[in-house]
Image 1 (cartoon, rainbow, N blue to C red):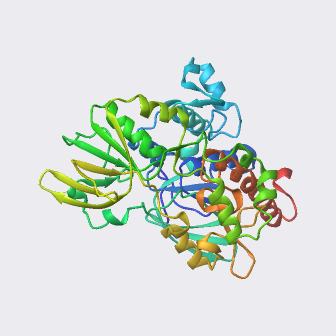
Image 2: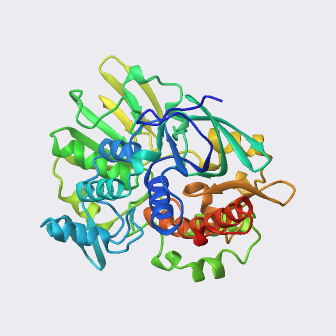
Image 3: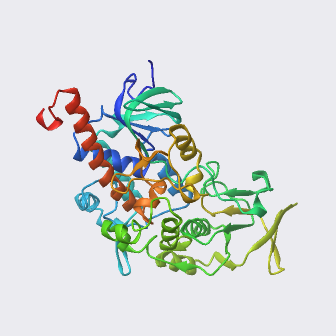
Length: 426
């Protein structure tokens, strides 16, 4: 059966592992598999419609004006903990490890991306990349068949590393207003912080790190900006307390509840510092003379001749030239990819559609309780990996368990094919 073409024109053949998504999670997992298992680039296919590792992550980082990562310098796509630090030191770029008050240094976005490209090149990761989008998946005897926009192929294991999903959060007052009426979401691909600005004021709506980053970026370009947040801005150095990096803490505080349960969901939600900004960003906001702040809830927005009329719940109103939403994503558990895979493979979902995973392997369980051929990393794995699941460190934690499991499965499969010899024997 003719299938998808890789970037170098190689025709399709069945493979051991298919990874859907080549963002931070897909890249980090693929690198770990190549570094720590017997798998080679011939055994792995990474399906990503952008055609380059971390392309979607970089695009979103540029869109929101990110200059440094929130994560520390030990969190990156290499399994070697101090790889990024060594990379910086070897290229006289230590100044791009930005000091942080009461916290380890953070890399600049440029340093993080350059190091990631170095790691990608070191492991020839693009040899495994398929520029395509997954459209369907079906079960087969020894794994799954993955359909993509450029063909289909079989795999022993499928890993979902698909990020937060494909639905952005639009407030109710914004749903009836078209983009032509000068309102857009920061994650809209058509929007860029470097585009020719509309004369007049931009109202950035949101109280989290993305809102703070894009507001300061626009203000530094000379745009009149007001940052509108519903409640007082809250600060946090990271997305969750560092204790959640440790598997023992995760097992004690999260795995004590049944997989897929409401207790797990609530524990993760309470532990994540969503809607917060780090203290260094608040310093930038407060130091920016071009940037104003407004604490309040928007009631309605209506297009008028010279822009948008915004009415607030306290009875006040103001006219702005445009509104930029930095209001995040809808639940990743309701994404089209998660829904399609769960439906086609009859996989179990728990409270609020959280995937029910095996805590030791990150395998997505079937409705009948058996293990499927599907593994999960990223936001979809929060029910097992915890509140750090969607972040860079979450990619490392998930990768550890998935790599160990895939190594065992490949060893068993290879032993069966060779009459008892394992991969280690070859």
